[in-house]
Length: 322
Image (tube, rainbow, N blue to C red; front, side, top):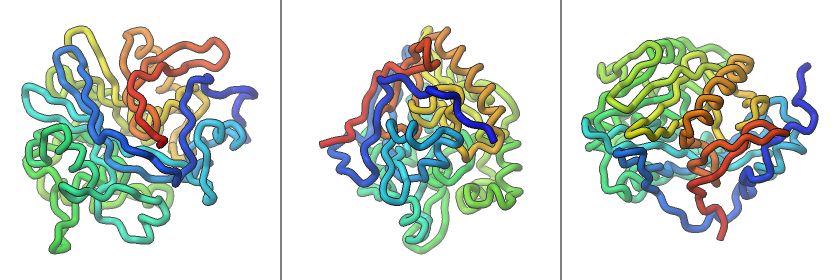
């Protein structure tokens, strides 16, 4: 049995999430920032709670609980954050949140909070706050097809039909990821739910890619395997500036240290190598990092902590208290 290195923890400035279920207070659904000449938005697509032990793998609870306090069911609060890029070739949305198709039992297990007022989900509200609608999105990039990243790619309409949430978009995913999601087993079935991706495939709306490439000028897909074999992150570049949407490579700022890896990862040693490679480059090239699941920090830059490894310097904190 492996164990986390003694004393290994994120640096002291890593945010401590509020107890799950504590008052969140008001927060912006959409936050604007720029990458060179590109206008970008972080979109708050709601919140869920997942088991804290599963989120931190071999890291002992006394360590991870300093950074993400669990509720009475040992669940920690996580964001469902997406990225929107106002690109000259059309709106680009990275990941789509959880959607509205799941049962009440599912919503209770994961304490889903993502109801919308201007559309089916909170992601629609965030798009509205950014001045856009789902119909305007031209490109949807899925980092992978787990339910909390691709669940909002489709939605259940009032008639009970599952339809595309972004009717005018081309959906982009790694070909290997769609294959992996479509051949489920006992380990992956709970995360890959066919209604989230099968209708997109049936409508022939996927652009299936292989490896690293630029989907559009300045929108680069990076291979970041480990969480799943064909996981990808998205690097946005313009005029010498860069921002990387890490997705589940580094879901929160507390996961920046190399050994802090989720128990959900199917290839944790691959995650370890990928994190070292990507974060080294991120520090060298001064990327902004966008965290999909951190409830307190949407964006940060890297700082190197000699004792604990990589740490974060938040540049966009999300209000989490009254």
